[in-house]
Image (cartoon, rainbow, N blue to C red; front, side, top):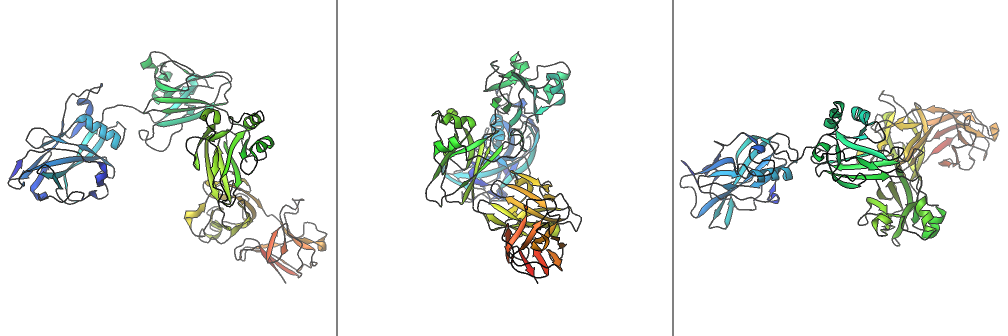
Length: 619
């Protein structure tokens, strides 16, 4: 026979458990067997809305929520022993994410109840702040305590859960976060911008209650820029003539850079945002869990320069010779700038800052405070700002041990990344040409600063699309280099194929330059490969034929003169000899010397598929 019992219910920290295996044996197993204990949900609600337990002001309406009733077989409870319980609840049946709360008894009838406010707080802090209705899975873990101190768990991990049941649960709606927010007004007509949702805030892929931060960057108006913030509810209300659902500034300081935001309907006034004339772009960040905003005028300079490094600081600012590289796009379309800093073999830290033209010119007037430094402690990635804002120098430094360091700055978001670079000798091509199985063609490191060059045969024999990627280690997709990595741009006869690179000029051999320092790639299709020299007055040369089986260019029946010939690509359209090969026939290099070996049958192997070198045979 089961008997109700007097129990004291207490909680236990999350660290006591591994959710993949259940409660851990931090406590010995109790002498009270699982078979002697039960927890019944008779009388416990199956649907709970916390608004029935807690009012809008946070006051308790009902002070307890029944979870279950514990009972033990007659005579099974050891002397001087009581039971304690803790409750776990989760949104999934496997309890892959769960929270725990303290439980306590009411009276001496074994009832397990929880304080509704404790349940609310544990749910929001332990699982999610989303106030939507959800199915909660609930289970109870029981312990015995003998003589007030000797604690033991009832059952072994995996078989000590009591009364696993579900509850339709609706938390108290503390905060409502919409899935999307928009700028209303700004550079656009207010009504039209609301109707068209023209300027939308960006957000991560996380649930908005896990990540409540939304960000947008938009063009400033010609003069002062006035705007408000709205969700879909507010935009729909505007169409009906109601502008009071928009969000404005709590306190009414239109030009506040940070503060609280609230709906106009609650504030009783418009309290519109304003950014004074002079800004090119405006960045707005809102945290809808906290109900806060931050407004920034964004001005990106056309140029940035490394100051210091291996050079005198003042001299490098004056000369502006250490210029960051940038694509040919508008800086607001592409705010990424890159500089490659050479290491020093680890002989000492290398210190530097960076600045724009304004900062460099200020240094000429002995003002060093316009330079940019790191926010917080020095790290290889983080945020930056002007020294005037930081109130300190906060110069950057690296240990100098890497061969090179790639310094990348995002001038729009004011973030930086410093990447030590020690380059592998080869980068391997893998793609449709070889059925995505053989990474044999390769580019070679031809400049220690991270530049790889070579020739690649790109084809699509299976109709999959003339696309490809690279690997640092052949066959290892963990070392993949794809088009998404090319923050420095893809130019020439290659393009972004949506993750893959795409050979846009069709099947053929391409001369490729891959810069792994600034993450850019360019390609030129070889439309004509010729053998040129004194035998043809050094014109475009005698055209060779591509052999796609042996991966080589072939030419027979030509008579070349010793020391007076080489290979020339696209001679008909490239009078500058941009792509040519010469030197030792076993190790041909771009722009190399004239070739001395003579014969009448010449084969050129440019793709490094069968050798680490570009080579030719002459017979």
